[in-house]
Image (cartoon, rainbow, N blue to C red; front, side):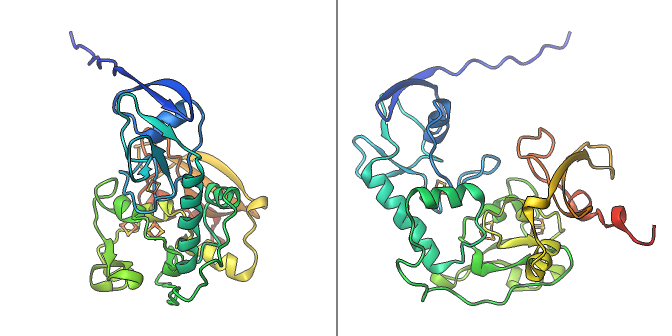
Length: 287
Ligand code: SF4
Ligand code: SF4
Ligand code: FES
């Protein structure tokens, strides 16, 4: 008889969040503990399918007895922890972090939760001026996806998705120093000449529009990109038997980009080149 593995239940730890007592499983992060009682903490570099990288610091919270604010996305809870998620100090730091990011990066296309958080903390994107922004050409090297690193917040999500957290291709990494540091292929060669296998998993996790389907980029340039007119159809990829879920974003009866749900047990949001970009046959005019 084959026995099913039975996991030991995690023991519970008592902590306090914003004055409320709560018992949370050992090993949970502060972010996960907050989610159990619907306390919202903003995040930016964090994504639940990737290993926390701690680069942005918008998730910081105050912990009694800790001199520094701590990142909620990666810090594990400990017994008796007293956490303040919205103290004046926390709010001030979050506002400043967003404003410093906006001084170096074009944040016009950040994801919706970030837009809402920036509004919540009354962020002034021009507070520090924009003199530190880089002005790099958008890299358009193929018909699949573009790279616009003037929108890159160096969150490292794409590097993790290309590397150990999903694809294991290691085609991209951080290069350079200080304000001129950027995400790059090996020796900054063009994408088609690099190790990239065009899975698009980096595009799928990018929160700022720095990586974008070429179709979306061209439609935005032409002023025809209209998310309010798009609908999303979830289907199963037809290229092989694995069963990846695809979300087809459709506008004017044409597929304009493809994503996969983060909570899908097969993909965790990640796809291969066929599922991500192999849809042109669906709308071929030669068919
Ligand atoms: S498309 Fe895939 S292989 Fe290429 S850089 Fe992005 S994650 Fe890496
Ligand atoms: S390209 Fe996107 S995912 Fe990659 S580091 Fe920059 S903002 Fe993050
Ligand atoms: S979301 Fe926690 S450090 Fe970026």
